[in-house]
Image: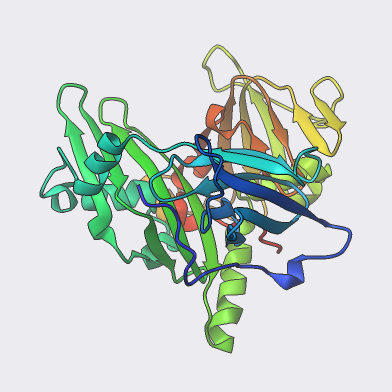
Length: 358
């Protein structure tokens, strides 16, 4: 698998987002785990942001980020990608020692050459993949994958499962939000029996250049996309401004019925605590999140046969073990939390980077 290449996009930094008291630095060195030799030219970026760089001849790298939490992704051709969680409160953020291991060549060759992949995969499953990866929103309709030829489609008849991988990073233009997304797709999986799709990967955003009118429209579209989003919700819960921002939180009955109880105080110390800049939420089970300040996308209402007059976005989260929120809206462990309702309908076409500032 090829890592992200920064030959043309060495560093993406939004200077306006950085202030002296709201940023922190990440420093580290990338080396071969066996030889200890530095790896020059390794790509290093905080996923789902606009910030990345490459290691120098000594394997050293440095990034400056707005306060919050991030997944730091380090990759190098022929080596296994490594992902570390970092934040402004991380003790070792100034001296990260990244040891990369050579990847299994037999596995990488399967992905690159497409061994076992369907020759007509895109023709058979391309439209389905786009709907469940990019989405079917108005924003998604303006997204284009520039290199769809790197996609590899695998169908497993016995388990009735579709898997999609990529031999190199996907390059996606989101003309609605004004981003070029460099997406390292680990895998996309759809289980036809349960109608559940999931995908994992590492996106890096690059802001597009455009005319003054385009920039104005992108700014508006980003803000409208942000309203009621999961990112908006997490930041509001962190800041204790849920009601002010238009959110209501309800706990759902564990019996599976539609009964719910409004959380009158979503900052109750029994399940909400602030520790070293991180908010810990110890709620377990399912919660319903309602957002009243912007109606759902019309395409969502039509697809799900909901009344077009609906005014409230309704989403839900399945939370088995609680989670923690950082200042920028990043939360963990994301892999354990399942989106339902409106948020589950939103895909890559609705994604905003963690360093987005409305």
